[in-house]
Image 1 (cartoon, rainbow, N blue to C red):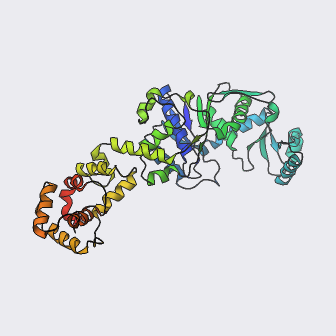
Image 2 (image 1 turned 120 degrees about the vertical axis):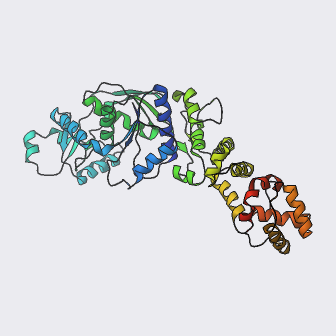
Length: 422
């Protein structure tokens, strides 16, 4: 079992999507289930609707999963396991207030050493605990041996027991801390492989310590992916800017990876992708490279599908979109080009009189299948030729003063001429 565990505390960023994609690919390769775990245990950070938005984005990228769950639904299990640890003296109640903890942190800062809880409450007797009428947290006892684990990308780790503090597992309101909830959930879900950002590498030893304390012996494999630098856009904003999900996924698999070809689908990547070959170094996000890949995916797209994405259901509009791909690289830019064609045009600067003549002529023109026929008809009716004909005619038909050859555009918009010349 693999899991993708996003928090509903903000927009999904590119690094998170990359983690989701890699989990999806590897789950398919291993023929194991992928579960989506919405880590919503920190209620104060949650944003309404973000959980649904996460699932919608995964659907948009065709990332299949066996089920989606909310971490908060497992609260009773988090608390039950904490009670087990307390009973076994592998955790203890801590009554130290914020002021006391801040004092300890200040002392550590002055001595220039990492903050470590001094263990005062661990020595309290059961009788003393019963006499205390104050809010308390639950802390796990310190590890009594080093924590060892292997990261598939980054190698072997041997974390000294002294580095693992008696950290809090249940807060004052008896909700779990991140590391504790994550460790319990991975155990309950029988997770076999964790693929996540390297930002969570430092959490791994604590999570293993929690499961060790609960006598959980299954060894979970880890892959901590290096970060992506220079990312200025969320996944949603890239979609809004006209980047295709297929192109974004293509780019994120390509990033920091050696692939047999540059342009591919996720389904193709499942055949040859190797998680252990991903670069250990941070990758730099390159928007120009993404635009190049996006353009390639638009070029390969079925013309009817492209037409529908442009708001039509006409093969000719799909072909028209392909013509304009000489100039643009995103769906948003492409829509802008097509919208200009159908926008009302008041005049053509520098050719005002010719524009009026042409517009009137086109309104009364019979249907012409061929552009040369149309051009001949206009010349006979108006006497216009050369730039006096080509410049205003291009503007009437496209809304622009330059662009692809009109003879390539006209056959694809001839059925809309009445709507264009309104």
